[in-house]
Every structure is written in structure tokens, then in C-alpha cells.
Image (cartoon, rainbow, N blue to C red; front, side):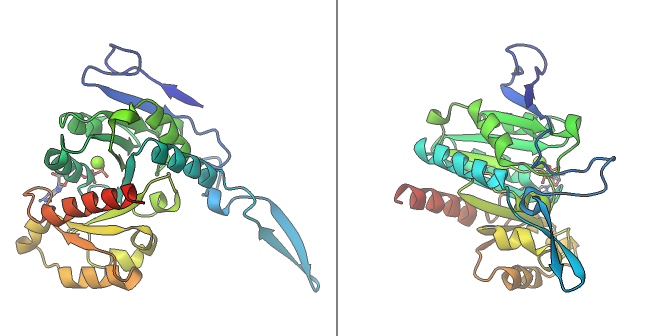
Length: 279
Ligand SMILES: Nc1nc2c(ncn2[C@@H]2O[C@H](COP(=O)(O)OP(=O)(O)OP(=O)(O)O)[C@@H](O)[C@H]2O)c(=O)[nH]1
Ligand SMILES: [Mg+2]
């Protein structure tokens, strides 16, 4: 169901700077559809058999959650990562909030003390992988365009991508999810922690308009704070909205560009990793 395609020649599936590029074939029933011949937008969690029930004189259609393959695969991934002693961080946000920039700077800070690898999802291009490979971390780029342009990463894609990495040499696997503030939060990929990045140019109200990702995350980052002097943006209000949908979630206000405020974020990653190690 997958094709590993060569990029720039060299070793099969691997380009000169060591990026593995994987295109995802969307043939599984539980994939998420944006196909032109299908009017619906289906997710595994809501998919399943339609059952018709009688209620008085009326018929009610009930869609049952009979199958959740993604969750099963996520569980398998989680077991596999636990066996290999790898901590997995799923980084999610709208397009352009600064995920890749944040990861470039984060990897610069924590490597080589922590051995890292990255899986990065995009609909098209290896731009992010090109940037992240410069940190020296092994990078796998997933492209979903060729087969429909899925707007999130699912557990089976992570399983395939992780298989191309030497997990024995990895302590921290960071997954940069596809830029989208809604769909990635619906898919468990077998991660240990989830992080949502919100940038100050997106508006304060995004947490309350798109609550799921904030509710499902273990930490929230407010990025691009270096731009605050030039914006009419109320950070306190943004944090209040984040806490409205997820009380007590840690919020790190930082600038990935200038690295100001990065310390508490790095400490949080280390703390989460040591918590997993100590069970
Ligand atoms: N001023 C400022 N710009 C930033 C900061 N972080 C990222 N940017 C800029 O924001 C733009 C998008 O950053 P990326 O890191 O590519 O964002 P992304 O979330 O990875 O984007 P996608 O992968 O396309 O979803 C780039 O022009 C970055 O230079 C920041 O802290 N401050
Ligand atoms: Mg990116």
C-alpha cells in the first residue's frame, strides 16, 4: 500500500542528504477522504456500518463505530516505540505556524545530548525535510499528494516511516504533522505526547474556534512572539482561550526565530521523556 520513491538518485528511496521520502497510497477503508467523486469527508472514528432502527413509525439510521483500525495500529506503534525505548512527540498546527522552524531550533539545542529523528508530513515537497536534515537528524518525509492529499498523518503511515529508521539509535522521534488545525488531532499515531503550535499572527480565538487540537494536546506553544510589538494581539487572551478548552495545559510563549523563551519548552520535553523512562 506504500511506495518508497527515489529522490535525487543514490540509494533506493534515499536522497543525497539522507532523506527518505514516502508517498502514501490511500487505499485503506479507514483513510480520510477528499476525493472529488465522493461527497463525504470520512474519518475512521466515525466510519462503520449503517444500521437502521425503528422508533415508532420512524426509521433512524445509526452509524456504529465497529471498526477503528487506526486506533489498533496506533496501539501497535505505541508498543513498538515502548519496546525500543523511543519517546514520540507529535507536533501539530495550522500551516505556517512555525513547526519546522521550532524543530530546527529545538534539534539544535538538544542534539547530540538526545538522539533524535524526525518524520515530517506534507502534502507536497521535501522542503521541510531539506531544512530539518541540516540539523543532522535522520529525516523521513511523507508526501500524501500523489494519492489524494490526506491532510493528517495516520498510524499506518507512521509505522511504515518508522520502519525505515534505526530506532535503536533514537531516543526522541519527533513527528511534524501536516499543517492543519483540525484533522491531525483526530488521529492517534502512537505518540507519547502531543503539542499544538499557535502563532500570534493567527488570532487569539483559534483555541475556541478549533478546540479539539488544544483539548487533545499535552502542551501548547504560542510562537512568533518576536512579532508582538508590531501586532494588535492580546497574548493573555489567547492563553485564556487555550485554558478555556484545556484547563491547566502548559503554555510556552516563545519565538522560534529568536529562540527567546525556548528554555521552558526544552525542559518540558526532557521532563516528559524522563517521566516515560521512570514509568
Ligand atoms: N517572526 C517569526 N517568524 C517565524 C517564527 N517561526 C516561524 N516563522 C516563519 O513563519 C513561516 C512558516 O514557518 P514554518 O516553520 O515553515 O511553518 P510550518 O508550521 O512548519 O509550516 P507547514 O509545514 O507548511 O505547516 C516561515 O517564514 C518562518 O520563517 C518566529 O518565531 N518568528
Ligand atoms: Mg513545516
